[in-house]
Image (cartoon, rainbow, N blue to C red; front, side, top):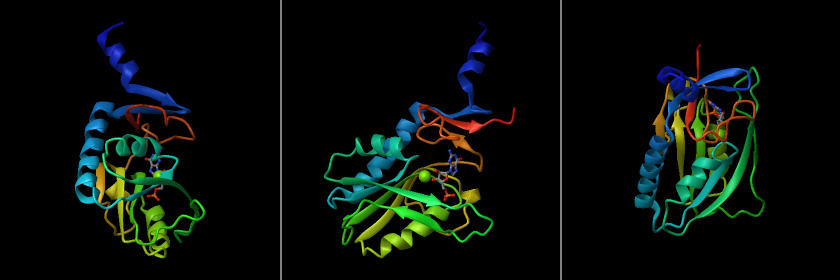
Length: 188
Ligand code: 5GP
Ligand code: MG
């Protein structure tokens, strides 16, 4: 096998019916996650924050990130189902654990990717009804070109172009979440 063949095999993969090319290496993701954890540590080490992990895509980022924290914190999972209809009403269903008391808590939403921002634009006002002490967002990926809303990802990972990605928890049609690296939809 030539060097080119080897590169081809490693860097170009198939997930379902689509081809994806290697985009961000696992080693670079690890460095970025450490940077995010360091920033969160600086701001929250005395605040006992509550992480709200948006299922399913953020589970790997959340698992990696909180294991880099060395102070008291809590974590819960939320599921947010958005409707991609013709109208951009931003209507979403939000499923949170019952009896979760968020009042006066320092909340940090953990996302896989901020794309249009519709999910966060619907979730943030819902969370504010619980009267938290503070509210912040971290996302391992941010696609500013796709944003339809004006809000800030407080602890962003990689700022990426508006192309579909899989791996590191993110799926295509349910597959690809287990990939260690991040892959981008290939035009080939
Ligand atoms: P929103 O458009 O509301 O910001 O993002 C909604 C959700 O769509 C994200 O949390 C993520 O699960 C999914 N999503 C957005 N862009 C991508 C992408 O490039 N790849 C994958 N796999 N999921 C995405
Ligand atoms: Mg998500």
